[in-house]
Image (tube, rainbow, N blue to C red):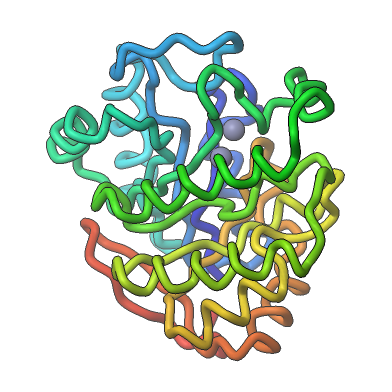
Length: 269
Ligand SMILES: [Zn+2]
Ligand SMILES: [Zn+2]
């Protein structure tokens, strides 16, 4: 199995050293892992209310640490990824910054609508003050912009706006799901089945079954990630995730080296 979404304590809201995540992956029998810690927002001149990323000065150390871990490991393939916030107006700057780093893959995620970190537990209350239909519209507009930006290899936790359980009906969601699957396909993107949503109030993977099925039907490649912020979360809920992937019609997982995509059959993961 593959877990492409592991964090490190550099982001200030995760626990455990990279080598502890690696040992957890070994215990779970994973074949390949990738660290994808939060890219420094400071490099884009952004300072959020709560610190949620590494600082600009820590990026080189992060890259060096993961590269060293990979070089010293014989059984498990260890990849260097990163999770980057999509921020409108910062795309050009970000393209230039990302091009100079030796990442195996870049996950693009939406965590912010303006100054609102809508995935942060301390900022959940704002959902209650806003029109939910507008929140979803704004989220998906940003997501589709991120998909079209050309910045990313993988789109992270693609329907994370449901994290705290504030949801629209399936009928209201259907156009968003269809459009999302189509835009992923048009842009040649991969997305992740992110198992962390199961532990959130949403109590469901990102994405849920319907969007996963639509993506499979469109032929959009998928990879797998736990979004672990502690070693004991590595590979969490992966038995269920693999079952869901098969039921949705997937037969292979995407993996990345130096931002080039290849595939591993699901039977071998
Ligand atoms: Zn995080
Ligand atoms: Zn994220």
